[in-house]
Amino acid sequence: MGFDDGLILHLEALVHSLDKNTDTPIDLYIIYASLTAESISRVKFINDKLEAVTLILRPIPKESRQFIENINMDKARLPIGTYFRIIVPEVLTDLERVIYLDTDMVVNASLTPLWQTPLEGNFIGACEDRLVFYHRRVNAESVLFGKQGERYFNAGMMLMDLKLMRQYSTSFYSAQLALDTADVIKYADQDVQNLYFYGANKQIDLTYNYGLEYVQYTDRPLSEVAIIHYYGWKKPWMNMVTETFMHPSRRPAMHLYRQYHNEMKAILGDNPDVISVILAADQAQSGEFERCFEGFLTQTYTNLELLIVTAKGLTSDLQTYLKTIKPYYPNIKVVTGTMAQAVKQSQGSYLYFFNLDDLLSEKTALAQLVAACQQGVQVVYSGYQRLDLQKKVIYWQKHRSNEVRALSLAEHQKAATELTSLAGLLVTKDVAAEIVRQSGGITSAGLLKAATKAAFVDRDLWIQLVSRQI
Image (tube, rainbow, N blue to C red):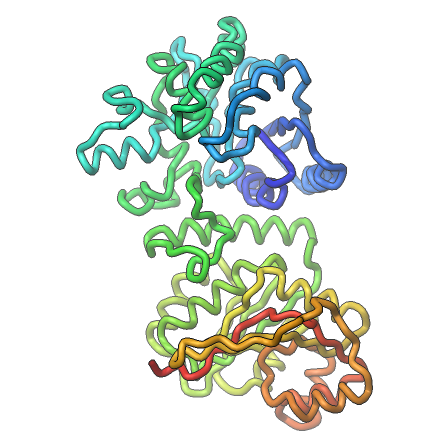
């Protein structure tokens, strides 16, 4: 695997999926040109938590970097690290065969059959790329490769015969080809390797590099796919409503990635305290709740329990949506009753109140609020924006300081009077539980009066929707 500091946040899902589904020990070599001490420490920490997979950091020697460092990357608009694949034979000189994997993948089955695949004298084994699938659907040819494009492969997964590649100095010659074609090619080293290894690569079953186009347009269940590859710019850590549109048929694959990611975060203990997110559902309109859920499902703080509170029952479309996502997020519960009953049923150390028709505007929102609460604060809230859908106007306060401020006594008392909604409040469970025990209900004023210390995050972390009828 080629690696840099920008990929460290996306390592967990891949290595956990490998660790969970392998039937044999795996050495995963991470080759890199430069990593910060923090990234190296993180990789080692992750390695200590794995059972069957061993992460091995392997720096790229200067003489190997010289193969690729002069390649013009302007047209590809990608980091030079994408060319690490070319120099794998010269970096891992002690190995004769490897499976190369991109980071934006999950492994859903044992890779032993792939590892045992005979290459029959070919340098590499790889799977066809989505471009072949697209050209086949529209009955067209590749502009750059013509008929040769019918065997165009995706370089995100390659079974590589390193011994044979070293014997023929493929790193040197493919790097030279990259230098000569940098102004013509579009997909960086992938185009280069398709040119260089044309007629010398074995086509492998798509199950070992299954892109989202295949998920959408073919009938193979995800349970029968060995490697899911999230190539392209639409990534599973993106919000599927506010950042990108994702076809419904592709969404289970996105949720599966997040499931692996969240499971690994739990193993690592990154977020030890559970946050119970209590969502008021009765006012939410169709089409708004998924936007809200995506805001929570893409938070960097992943140890969440989601409680959907309804007094009159959930709408049919919300029930269908919850049934679809619950296999990937087991800590989703429906509470039929009041907010106070949800507080009683919650399992978290912290409670975060929200309306199902509003949305979080930052992926670090909950992390910021918890960090404030961990300083001895019992109630913390933030700034927010108001979006008037009828007028198509958004309102916000200028000159946010982006600071966390402990409330003075006067500010504390003022907040208890002015805050009329629970939405946007993060509170400790013990304070909320005591309010419910004493009064049988829960309000923002009651929480602030009971809290001995409160804080305000002077930053707009969420958006309130008003005037929904348009």
